[in-house]
Image 1 (tube, rainbow, N blue to C red):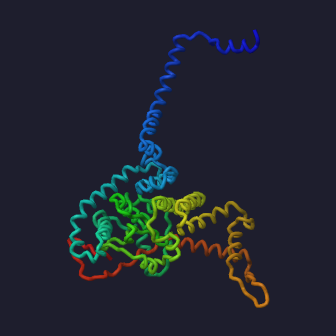
Image 2: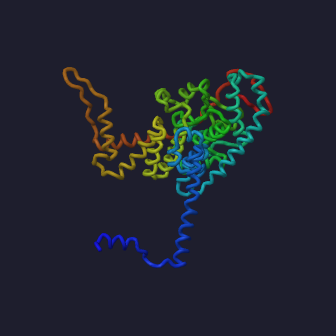
Image 3: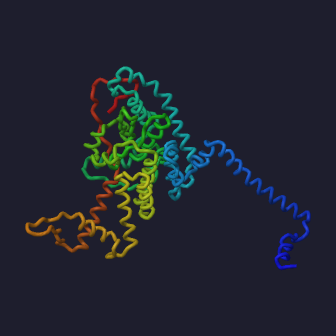
Length: 420
C-alpha cells in the first residue's frame, strides 16, 4: 500500500466510537447554532424581499444611533431624522451624559407639538382680520404663533445669567465673555429639562417642532447667532427665537441681520449664513457646539476633533472654521517646541510674512517691511490678539432689538400676536 493510500484511509476512518453523549453534544451544538443564526437569516430573507425592511436595518434603531452612524446615513434618510435625536446623540458622547434617554425628550417635544396644534386654531382669527399685517402669508403667521406659544404657553426663556451679561454689555458697550462649561446651554436636552436656553438651543426647538408639523424650516447662521429659517422656495423668513418675554414675536429680514448682527455679505454669498441648513449641516452645528464646550473646558484635543468633524459635515460654515483654527492652536503648542516648524508661533510668522502688505519702491522690487520689535515677542502678541478675536467671534450676540411694526393698530386678541 502506497503512502498516499494510507493517508486517504486514515482521513476516512472514524476517530473513535460515537457514543450517545457525543451525539447529544453534536445535536445541542447544532441546535444552538441554528437558533442563533435563525433571526439573522430571517431578517436577511425578509430584507431581501422587502427593500423597506432592509433600509430600516441599514438605518439603525432611532434613538440609539451614534453620531458616526447618523453621519453615515444618506442625505435623504438623514433628512427624516428627528433633530432631538441628533442633539441627544451628540450629547451622549460627552462624559457623564451617556445615559440621556432620547425617548423621554422626544415625548416631551411631541407633547408641546400636540399642544400647539390644539392652540393654533384659537388664534388664527387674528390673521383673517388683518392678513396684510403678516405679509398676507398664513405660514408666516403660524411661525410667529409657534414662537409666541413656546414663550407664553410653555415658558421657554433665555438663560438668566447670560441674559444679565448681555444687559450689562449693552450698558457698558463691552463684549461679554461667555464660557459654555454647561453642555446643556448648547444642546437641546438642557433646554427641555430647564426651559432655559440660548441662541444655540431655542431656535433648534423651533425647528424640531416645525419639522414635526411638516414645515420647510431649518437652522440658519447669522454670524455666531442662530435663527429658525423658513424657506419654501418662494418666501423666506427668519424667526428670532431668543426674543421672549415681551409678547408677540420677532422676525428680522436678511438685511436687518446684515446691519444689526454684522452678517458678512460674503458669508451669505458662500452659503455660510442666512440660509436654511440641511440636516447634515445641522448635525455639524450640534457637533460644533460640543466642540465649543470642550474648548471652554480646556479639552482642546477633543474640541479639535469635533470641529474637524463639524467642518466635514458643514464645510461652508465660517463659524466652524474659526473654531477649528482656534482649537488647533493649543494642540500645536503641545505637539511642538517653541521654535520648531509647526508650533503656533511659526504659523504666526508664516501668516505675518504671507499677508503683510508689500511696500512698492520706485526703481526696485517690492519688499515687505521688517519687524521693528523682537520677532518672537511680536508674534506672541499677534497670536494673543488673534485668539482673543476668535473668542469674541464665537460668543452669542445680543438678541436683536424689537422692530417697529410696519402698520399700527394690529388686532388685539386675548393675547397679543403682533410681529415685532
